[in-house]
Image (cartoon, rainbow, N blue to C red):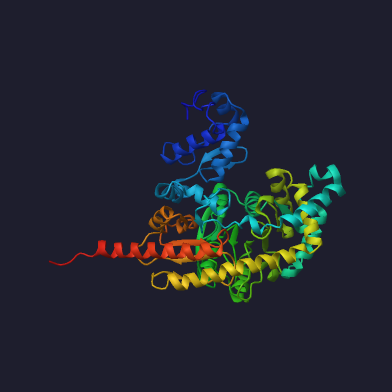
Length: 492
């Protein structure tokens, strides 16, 4: 990096300067030219050398931290993360350079071609958004509150909305107070705020394996040691969890107990209770990411950990991205008193406050009980897609050799390929047939696991589902035959 100068970045390119700088430093780190824990130049020093604004370096460092390539020590500077922290990311980058695009597809941030059948995105199709209801409420809020809607809200969130959320949560048997609710700009920010508030360099964080990619990246950005515990069809492996908690003394346990992403698995009530017992015994906090407990298609117990939490051990995250409108970036945390002040400080340093206009509109949305009608509407639409998916899987995958478990709700289906088959290859072959899937690699925080893939019904219509599954079945069958033929050597 000593060679960086005013000509390093090309100001004529349409690409932002901070993105150029991010790519340059990332590539240097990936090539191993900077040793573990190498201290990057101070922001002002590097900005002066490059002849750019300080904000360019700040944004590049922030993106490097978010992606797990560097970590920060308050008062000391920015340092290169140990190879262990990003080796798995490098493997994925080598296998399919569109790895970052896959994550963005999953979050609905990349537009998919109209002719593509996308099982990759977990973001709802735009026709499901309650646009008309939102338009009416938006105009009402503007008429009522005038210019106040565009001012900063208090960092914790618009108080009437926090009141509405406490009433909303009673539907999920969660009792709390407005002062324990923190408004956030989506679940991803919630995880980030919790990590900033509670996780320091080299702290241990336990996660499910596989798990949500955004959580992996966030905990890595804090320099945490990620410890993964396998998830089974009825929830995380309890024996391994308790042993890991006892030995590693983690700062946090991050879980998605209902319709987990990516597997679609839901925890049994027995396991939920046992997890709380472990957390109490070892005095460890749980982060519960309530991904999609609203969308239940087969009536089974889907209560939250938070509803069972009597000891203030669970930090509860809820986003409305999948059931309202993702572009509004709105969600909330329920905070135990023991972490209240730390989370408030972390949220304020993240973005000062979440959009006041969105908060005020959503407050009315909840107070008028419009959300109930919308949830029922979403359930009906998604149940149709869910049933078509189940029938298509039964029809086309029955002879594919795939292993899978039909979830009781949510949007995701998780598949394991026959031994020796590779989901990266299936991904490549499917793209050529205009079908998108998510290879399982990106969901595993430690191991390089390529025998799984995820399909989501969020962004596909019923007629696309059957066609997409038929295409995938033919690809897998053909690939299976190629694999058998290639691996068979006759004795002559």
